[in-house]
Length: 456
Ligand SMILES: Cc1cc2nc3c(=O)[nH]c(=O)nc-3n(C[C@H](O)[C@H](O)[C@H](O)COP(=O)(O)OP(=O)(O)OC[C@H]3O[C@@H](n4cnc5c(N)ncnc54)[C@H](O)[C@@H]3O)c2cc1C
Image 1 (cartoon, rainbow, N blue to C red):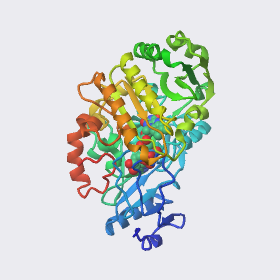
Image 2 (tube, helix red, strand yellow; image 1 turned 135 degrees about the horizontal axis):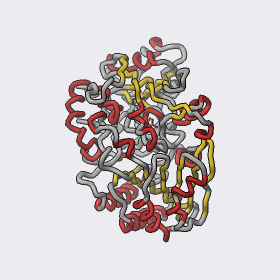
Image 3 (cartoon, rainbow, N blue to C red; image 1 turned 45 degrees about the horizontal axis):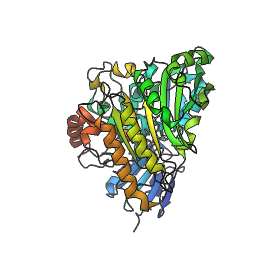
């Protein structure tokens, strides 16, 4: 029997909504593969509603899980019909201070909400690079973005977090005055946040643009043929990225196999073309780059945001790029994407300038791979028939093993937000694992937040 929420309803504000008897697959998620299957969904309207819901769940021993953008593809979700989803979709407010130097982001805001508000205010804010992604869902794991070279990771831009703790308390934690001694919870939330509480809102740094031209960037894809893969990978391996640059390479059928290198340069077209000359030298078959307003920077990835179907994903961090390895993973992808129903499967490679990220000490946050990982790669199997799951897993694991064989790292790694769920926990949490485990015992001894690559 699904969970009985009748005693919760009177405790919530009038704006809160409850969906009971949720029996079908959750419609709000990017991937249905191993998705949570709640018995009920609570849509809080206020931060107090979140706290009340957590306290109610604790009192009635009802398992719960928070959902922001619904894009997490982890296979570690356990929530079933005995539990509830706390869906933050009614909490999407964004508010800037008068100077435009700080922004308060509600727990359910999406990247698109933040970008729209930031553009209207004339400030830049670190977000993910896809509009549908939950702003805090992305940032609590680290938060990579096109502005990472200038402003660092999303977690490095946090100033305060309002958190409902595993005890049901509502607390505010703030960035400490000195970086050397972050409190336990401040350290843990930034890199492993979903294991330690619900963030109902966060205060982040914002960067007012003095010059309106800075609300534009030169961005868009160059398209290459599959036989140009080695040249593209070699060029990216040797490319020295300035803080104004970022690259995302997607390999996908469009409709024939194609390599899309989406370039980002926070400046003019001429400067961008000069900065990425090595890629133009390879002679792309198409060039869709253009000077683009801030509100449209993420538009090119909107198709990656379409909800539904199955999208298990296997991801790795890499210290180097090996063209031969990429030819091998390309072959795995090509076989996978020739299978009927799996034609939209894809490979993604992110190449980012990381000096700013590395200027922050490792000990400042739980995010573990500042000084080792240089590139982020993943393979997504995209299909809809559950009968294809086992085949998809075999392709995904194969591609991951090929990448890992030449990852150039002493310890395999994956960005937590891209992890699958079968990895060794050290691969996800790196050297932060022992401290995180101790903190888990202390902060969440009853393991109420235990669905996102659990620390036990
Ligand atoms: C199309 C696409 C593009 C992406 N682009 C980027 C990118 O540019 N940069 C990047 O860093 N990552 C990116 N990612 C990865 C992304 O960071 C993760 O998928 C992230 O987990 C998604 O967060 P969500 O809120 O959308 O998903 P959800 O599934 O809702 O949340 C993911 C996890 O975070 C927890 N969580 C969410 N909100 C809160 C909260 N307020 N308090 C506590 N816990 C919370 C959830 O409980 C869940 O465990 C992308 C993913 C996709 C699918």
